Length: 473
Image (tube, rainbow, N blue to C red; front, side):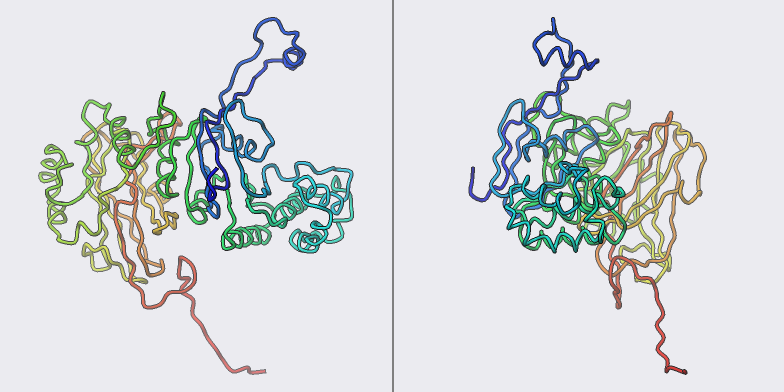
């Protein structure tokens, strides 16, 4: 294994045997079963992965994609069916909090028990005991049997043990948000400390904001297959396609790592199964003379959207609209145009903090839709979703539309985001037979600059007023 690699996974495959009856499992383990009494479930399929020392890597994917399985194999809880795992460094794992705790022992005894299971000596655990107890903050309950603990106290102690062992590699499986809000804040602060210390971190989370904020890289698993790895923003965008069934999953070449262009082309091909090609049903607004636009779509836009032509001629257009917009959908609707106007009603991608502004989108429908939902979302440049809304939440439009209808949608609000650069995404979705359906989405389509002469802490300005007076007492 290379010197700068902390974790290396080679051709990892894990197959589970699923039995209909417990007796079938017993017979099979004793070699008494006649014939095959189980079904095979492929939890991981030929996965390859490297994690560098000092790197923070997040693993995302739908339920049953193999995320927890790969962590358990790396930590030695499970053995692989095929493949190898190499680890360089001492691991502390937060897989199932409290796994290995003896319910009859008190908290102190379990701290020593867990520490020794991880591989630390009694002296090393003693040196860390005060830090563990301070972090857990469960008072004198630490001297009571663990079976008497509430679920909150139990996870606090388990987390405190794992996080204060001071490992070289930290592996976390959905365990950062435990306990009350104050304890959660403590957990995230500790996590940030680990990053600053240059420790290697590998963690699974469904909290995409945490993946965007903390990870240097993200890995996307689906049905045991590694779909790709790259920047958190890129992988999260692909993951959202997988969630709504808009990403064509590889069927044979399981080691194919998709780059940006291939992802977009594959998504467009899948959407293009409609009678009218998807590329012709939508326009990305990438500027005049863009060869990627179809003549039919451009012609339709010229005929139906005079304002669109005016926007296309703006010299700053190429600097505000993203040529690498991630675009997908089933083709039932097309976002043909999108723009922002300031408090004077003028199209602009610069908005002064504290003023009113409006987000616009023009949508053409290619077939009848019972109840379309129009949405926009602001992200920061790290890909973290900051705010957004949709027409269903706002109770602004709950009506059916017909094929050929064109709708102009506008969202007006006051700009309270801090000064800086943001990315604006647009979407048209809905529910068909209770299934969430994406008709058209444009991720990170437009750049919006918020101009401010006063930035407070965080993402939003609470518009506080401050008063200082002499004490009258």
